[in-house]
Every structure is written in structure tokens, then in C-alpha cells.
Image (cartoon, rainbow, N blue to C red; front, side, top):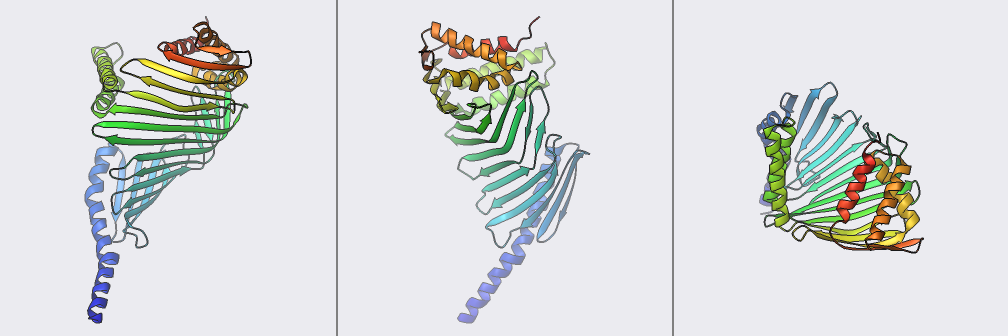
Length: 355
């Protein structure tokens, strides 16, 4: 009996360590080429399958390339595949390092790191080490974390913002045809002072069918010729999909927004009633000096123009009875409609160049 158990144990180990890795490699050889041909278009790729390992080289052009090495059924992990990769996929990411894992129960874990990033545009963004982590398990929330050290943003008129560390957390869950997006953004140890940001936002009751229609209409809009019938049809599609989302109960919940140490806000907007509320308060100086860099970068204006814009908001909200201040601290109590439109209009006006 003992001899039989030993034989069965050796057989099981042989299957686990020798036979199954080959079967996993065979599955890779059958599934990956079709996915690559569909995804890469004109990109070049080369797959080399071994019994225990596979290697994949992808080249889109001279500046976009990745090399992957995958271990089939690593004996020390409960995973079908463990993959590492190195390369470059965008000019603003000089180097990418990838570490991925597909678990036995279908859970996927992926970590992508880069020693530095540099985004050039109307607002240039530079950072040190950046890491993106994706955790995807069947039947559970999709969890994504993007963290970066040494963030720095610079606008065209001298506006700038720096943070020792920034992190964005995103969770996506679905249930019975509806989705929910939870977003948390944190910028810590910022310069100028009082600009540290904490934002906790939830978008609830997202009808998935309407969201799909919205994505399709947006893709059509990107491909449409300006001032053409296809562009007008795409815009009508966007409007129809948005109305369907609103009718499905779309709701925005601002759990908390903090700026610096002395300003906190909470809010909610219900699409069906087209009504919202924002409450909270803090120090006026924090509102002015802490918010100005964000407004200046968003409007591509100067910090002085941004401060004028913020004071215009304060004046208008005071006139409408939404904001009360003693000159040093303020209390905001808005319930109704019109606040978001007012903020958006003044932001657009500040971004319009003077003649």
C-alpha cells in the first residue's frame, strides 16, 4: 500500500512538473498568435514556445518594442503563467518593466514599472519611478493602482505644481447590468504649499449597455470628418447614450475632497433629477492659493488669472447665497442646479486668450 502511494505521488509530481507545463505551452502556441494578429495590425512579432518557457518579441516600430519571457506553470506558484517583460511602448516612457501572473483560478495580476516618465504638451508632466498595478479576478472588482514619485507639472504661462508622491486608485465592479467606478486620487507633499489634494469619488448606477453605446459613438466621432454627416450622427449617438445613462440612474458621489489641511468638501449629483449638492468649507486663503495651480494648468493660463477666476467663483456663489464667509473662513452649502455650469463657464472664459 505504501509503495502504491509513493508511485502515485511520483506520478502526480511528474504530471505537475513535466506534463502540465508542456500542455500550458501548447495552449500559449494556439491562442497567442490569433490574439496578436488581431491586436497588433501591422506590428511584427515572434513567438518561440518551449516545453517549460515561452518567449515573445513584439516590435511595432523602431521606438516601440517589448520582449516577454513566460514560465509555464511555475512550481513554486499557483499560476498557469508567470511572465516578465522589458521594452518601450511610448516616447514618454523610456523604459518599461513588466511582471505578470495568471492564476489557476483565472485571477490576473500585472505590474508595470518605469524609472521615469516625460509627457510633453500644453502641460508638461515629469515624474520619477512610476508603477501601475492591475488586479483582475473573475467575479470580483477590477482594481488598478497608479503611483508615481517626484511628480511635476508645468504650464505655458509659468503655472506649476509639484508633489513628492501621487497615487490614483480605481475600482470597477459590475452587478446585474450596472457598473460602479470608485476613484481615489492623492497628491502628497505638494508645492506650492496647501495644494496637497485628496479626492474620493464614486460614479454609481452606470448602465453597461448605455456605456457601450457611449464608447461606440465616441469611437465614431474620432473617425468622423469635421463638419460631416458622420460627425453629426456620432454626436447624436453620444447625446442619446448619455440620456440613457442618466435615465438609468447615474449618480456621482463626492465622498470627500480635501485641499491642504484646512479645506474639505462633500457632494452628490443625481442625473435623473439633475440636482446636486456640495457642502463643506475651510480657509479662504487655502482655497485661493491651493486651488490656483490646478485651475491655471487646466485653463492653460497664469496663476494670477487663476486666482481672479477663483475669486469670481467666490463672489458669484456669495451673491447666490451658496457661500458665506467671515473674510478668513467660508462655509459652502449648495443644493440645486447651476453651480457646475457656472464653474465650467468661468473656467472656459479664463482659457480664452485675450484679443
